[in-house]
Length: 150
Ligand code: ASC
Image (tube, rainbow, N blue to C red; front, side, top):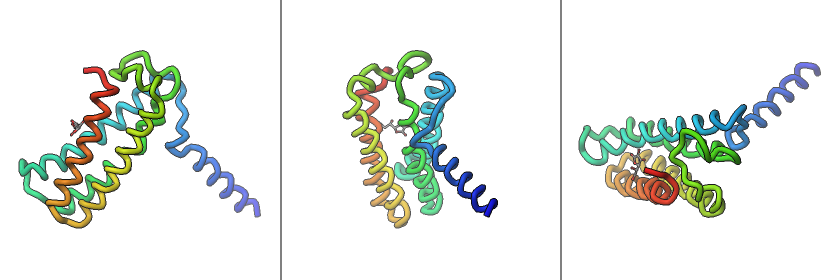
């Protein structure tokens, strides 16, 4: 019985520490967290980019593995854009906090497009991958144009 209670408590704690409800000790940690998540996502997205552009040979398995990471990473940065994280070492524009609904729409669009990218990569079809890659890159760019300083 005690063991079950322990497992239940551990499970509850794990659920509470899920990325969507991530808490940060200080604003700088939140900024570093979102930048790190975006950086890792960019690295894996770039590897797919090189393949779909023909700069490196297409390997369906490598593309699928990278796309899966991109789709998972796409869920993470948004928890790092909480209150009081608008100042510091950041290119984030103030509009992120004044246009919360629109920013959230962009976050959701990226998660949707990266999920499609992962699905497309899984098929092993290069043309599908190219289409999904372009759509995803478009959502990256739209948000960068609107919400990121150069
Ligand atoms: C990438 C990357 C981005 C996007 C963006 C798309 O590979 O790191 O931030 O694509 O450049 O326009």
